[in-house]
Length: 477
Length: 105
Image 1 (cartoon, chains in turn yellow, green):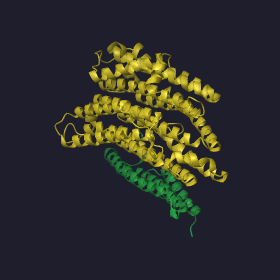
Image 2: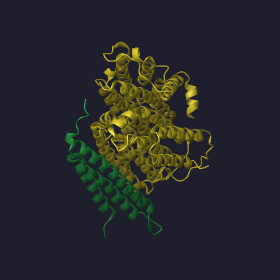
Image 3: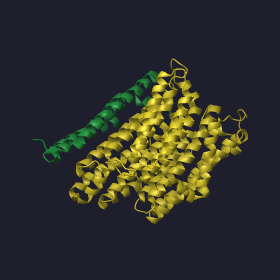
Image 4: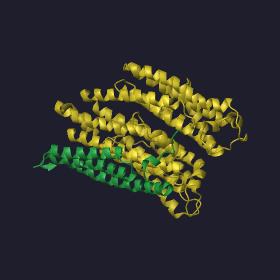
């Protein structure tokens, strides 16, 4: 069976759900989300047990990393859809249509199309396919970020994301142009073969192209100094989409970055300069993300800066690309990041729906009102900060290990300081939940069955990864 | 006869003009036009490179296929982008980026 079938199934599912939404007026819109979740879960099972041939087609590979990132995209989208069901009341409030259900169906279908783009990107080894799948993801995100169109801050976030996303596309494609011009190829495998025979006079053009590609990807993964869109867009976008952006879009940027770097390994003269640029990016990102997070009072904005900080740790692993386990460190860190970030956002959506706001003060006294939610968010925050026995610790441990092996001592010093900052701002949320008293209502927050199961599963997985790293590694491979 | 360098120079100029437009102009529609200019700079240099990479007497058509993809993607981006800008204008009666300042801490 050809592995490309999976993407086609996901794409068909998304388009079919859009058709259902157009023609079945009376259908309860949550059914669309449930169908989507079941469909994606089936694709996940098919991917796990389908026995796909691993033979690579031109520009399309099906190696272990590709398999992992496909599963990653599917799990992220499933959890985002579960969040969207909880969030649908807010969407309904800000999208006025002829019928009371207008707009909800699209809000459930578009993430599935984004998922297809993410899955394609996991396998793409040709710049043409990388570009198209990246754009499939980005253009659907433009729509989703600006989706709640009667909410001015969502629209503003959409416009900002649109301009900076298109700018990064411009840099990315111009970089591809120059790499193509020097190597006469768009396929990364072919480029890796041609690179050693590039004359020294042409290497400047190649370096120029590779740097532009790095800038374009820097926007996608939210690396400083290309991070300035992140806080505004994360705060303004609908919360499930913020979660999707911070997990899916970042992972996609990193897989492309790894593939491009892998191709450039065959030309050390250019590769060493690229690695140096990535070290600088990683240091700037770590410092900016973690220091700017300190004074934040809005939870979504805090998560935005935290997402920049985590991009820094991931870039640190990428900068140590020569080390044996660097790829594994990126993969484990991303898996841990998925669990803890999605867990934080799912709790945020439930709490924000109940208390009409997403500032940290809205979490005051949560431990008295809903001990389960407060405990889950405590686990998420502890894992994000990197407390031992959680998934976040395992990820940070591996990142530090590969950085040590490739002797990135500057980065290690910076990262140790920023981990300390991280403890301060993540524990600020914990303090609000456990030590502050609420002024508002004291009643427990209702949580739907589906969300309870998801939250429970995420908490269990965070501990499982942290306590039995071997088990986690087994799940990943 | 124009050489490859002439094409690259023209495309570099287009890219710079586009980037400068994004940085300096304050109207979102004009910024959006400048972004399209940057994509077209990439198209021009791709076609230039393709024309001068002769393989078996023919230009290398890989790059020209990529150009068609870029044109299509740019069209999709414009479709979504203009919709967002129109919705923004309806909500705020403005297309100036100085007025987009409600998201700050």
